[in-house]
Length: 84
Image (tube, rainbow, N blue to C red):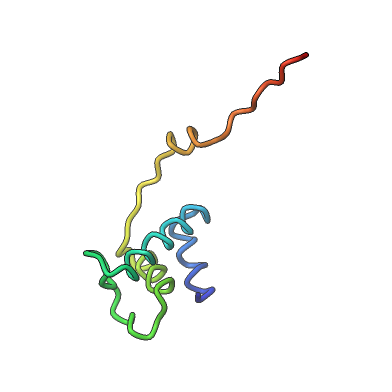
């Protein structure tokens, strides 16, 4: 993966965890050959699937919606210990 693409895509997304999820899902789509398997960028022929996904994010060809409520639900809660 091109580190410059990573920096630019991270500036667009803002959260590295979301960026990893976006790229991994898009790479899966590109490599599986399903309905959305065609690259949305022009210079995709000499790039790997991860670089294509990053370029799609950089060029605003891919969009995402961050759900803050879902992120709050995912956070683990602390368990209280019982005294014996």
